[in-house]
Length: 153
Image 1: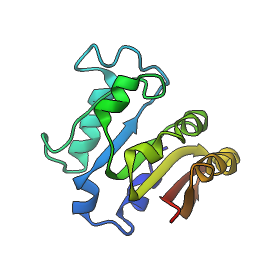
Image 2: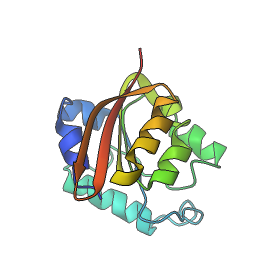
Image 3: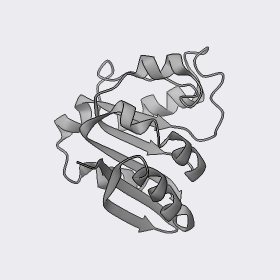
């Protein structure tokens, strides 16, 4: 599912912009509830591996796992003002998270979502547009879609 993410991230963003403020929601399964209690969960290990593969030095990012949809404390801990948010997760979770993205993202920031089955792309885009986002790029490959969005001015 993640094959579109690197292509869209690189287009139009410098490495410095991407590294400066990236929050990445990496989830292979919709099971979060144990992640905060254990420092080496599968989700955290996956995020750290991804960061290493993308040459992000340890200490230049923070990994947090939890259910951002229901955990207000986690949302507060994550904070706001990010230049870039990438979310590679199923359509239902992206739609549920749509109201949260504007809270985390700078007004001039970029949201990149992927892991979307092509048949569900339009409904996910509609959920993002309902939150004030506009599509700036959309790519499809082998039945999967990735979408790059900005907040409307």
